[in-house]
Amino acid sequence: EWTAHARQIPTLALNPEGNILASGSRDSTIRLWDLRTGGLRDTLIGHTEDVMSVRFSPDGSLLASASYDHTVRLWAVTSGKCLRIFQGHTNRVFNVAFSPDGKQLASVGDATFRFWDVSNGSSLRMVSFGGKIVTAQGEVPENLSSVAFSPGGDLLAVSSTTGLTFWCPRKPEP
Image (cartoon, rainbow, N blue to C red):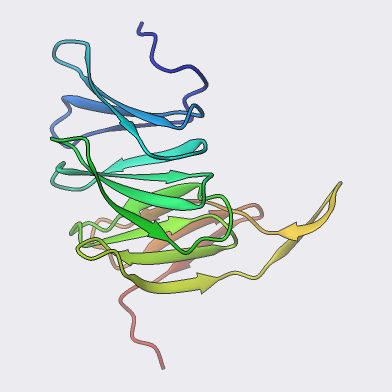
């Protein structure tokens, strides 16, 4: 058992080789752990609010993180440096996923899911759900909480407050 963070840890990810564990915390940090030695490799600092999702790229060289600070960040695993900040979400970002080829990221949060180009940080597409749900505090936008690509990258699953949506990212538009 390791003492890992000052606050809760809502997300973990293993790199493809299975020797590095990333932990994201409500203390706004990400820690990289060497599973061979049990030691801390690095602490990634940059987010200003809770880190809710961490995911390794398919080749393990990059780590993406999603945060309540409305951003997605891309980190170099070997150096621990933040390479890129993806901005566009207008509220909390709950989850992020790499496409199987590692060229795109999908992120979900503020009733939208967004696609990003990993190589240059540009926004490729934003899809708005526009749904609303009724809570004790009144009507609020429907949160999107998780995202996953199929192994071939031809299907994207998105979970929301009320259900699941499937989308074909490569399908040409009419």
